Image 1 (cartoon, helix red, strand yellow):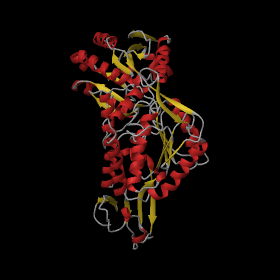
Image 2 (cartoon, rainbow, N blue to C red; image 1 turned 30 degrees about the vertical axis):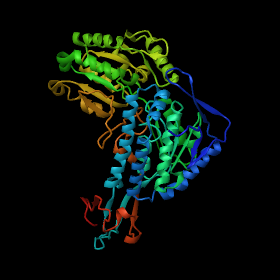
Image 3 (cartoon, helix red, strand yellow; image 1 turned 60 degrees about the vertical axis):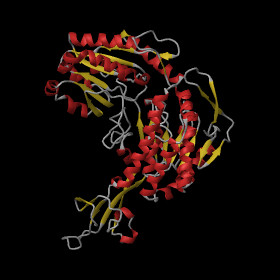
Image 4 (spheres, helix red, strand yellow; image 1 turned 90 degrees about the vertical axis):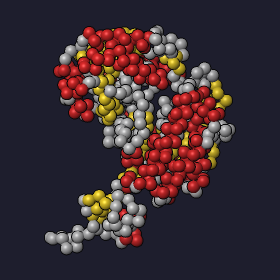
Amino acid sequence: MTAISGKNFIAGKRSATGSKTIQSLNATTGEALPFQFSQATTEEINQACEAAAEAARVFRKVSAKKRAEFLDAVAAEIEALGLDFVDTVCAETALPVARIQGEQKRTTGQLRLFAEVLRRGDFYGSRVDTGLPDRQPLPRTDLRQYKIGVGPVAVFGASNFPLAFSTAGGDTASAFAAGCPVVFKAHTGHMATSELVAGAITRAVEKLGLPAGVFSMIFGAGVGEQLVKHPGIKAVGFTGSLNGGRALCDMAAARKEPIPVFAEMSSINPVIILPGALAKRGDAIARELAGSVCMGAGQFCTNPGLVIGLQSAQYDQLLADLGQHLNAQAGQTMLNAGGLRSYVSGLEHLKGHSGVQHLAGQPQEGRQARAQLFKADARLLVESDPLLQEEVFGPTTVAVEVTDDAQLRAALLGLRGQLTATLIGESEDFDAFAWLVPLLEERVGRILVNGYPTGVEVCDAMVHGGPYPATSDARGTSVGTLAIDRWLRPVCYQNFPDEALPEPLKRANPLGIKRLVNGSVTQEPA
């Protein structure tokens, strides 16, 4: 494995001009790892952004085929990182080897999926309206449209996925696919991991002969504001807290040239347990739900933080069973000390609320998170109580019991935007509660039936987004191939001669891509 230098990646070069360093820590013990990282200076941030702006003019024109080869090369370089790389990730995050190896495969799979998107060409969104010189009362000139990259993208690494939502994660992969250079801000919780992956990206850039400014990575606390406010940055990708995401959105909006921020921020992902399912398989639901709540120490964006059921003896029994499962859970080490502090603070806020009752869970003490179950008065949802809307990032969930369909409707209308909502039911439930689906469509980005929201498939159809505050822009997704659309904008070419048109719009359709031609989808020459 390549030695860890702790230096910033600035357009293909390593830089450490500042005097301040940040220590990497072992997530399990809290002890210092033998890695220190140089806090990026204002000069280094400017150099990275300026190099990205210069590279964007070239990278945007690089063929989709070559960009696909680049993504494949990044995937191959990440695969070549050995077992000592996995050991480093595990030390920094306390995540088990199997989880990291799985996440490594997900990361390379995402890169290769976007390579396939580039090869099939549908991301261009090509539209052609051929000229109608004889149209009356006025002729129509030839009009052709496709999408190009917006320019350099600032990407912020997430704490909970050190690979799949980090240096070469979905935001970076989709931005590269769109032809956008990336300036990446490494998360302080796994800086050594980020350096090793950044090295893999840099090697791929060099192998493909791309401009060095296609990728840079900076370390440091408090460097995000300079990055987002730099005029060379044209969009931002972020996964993290609501406060952090809102701060970035406000910074971006206050710029002389406002730019979009695609931030995934906060979600409690309600699970609605319907009566038919509860009567037939309440035991299994309690067991499965406990597994989802505790998976990965509850450190998933889609952790089920809210359980809703109709008042009944069966629902009372389900909560009792769920409490027993959570009581039996061993403590789990969280990703970092800051995450544990936030978790403990969230539990204290819930315990201190007059409308919330603690049902189950071992006392929270020491360095490990303990699973917890709370029960809240339904009126807190109906009245949109802020505390019940807040995500507690860890292995805990809040149960709500509603009296009837009317209160269920009112409670769901009181919810803020979410990434997911889950319906656990039988066929008769879906007939009786058909009204739930259109209501949930207004509130969430993904609706599940008889499954659990933890676990997000990376594919064409996936939506990992939702109305605010789940994300800052509900029209996008951070997982799945639609993620590329965040970094693209349309350009129209009017009355261009064929030789001057971009390749995807040429009349002979040399790339053979599907295009909307005069209202019909075709792969034939236009």
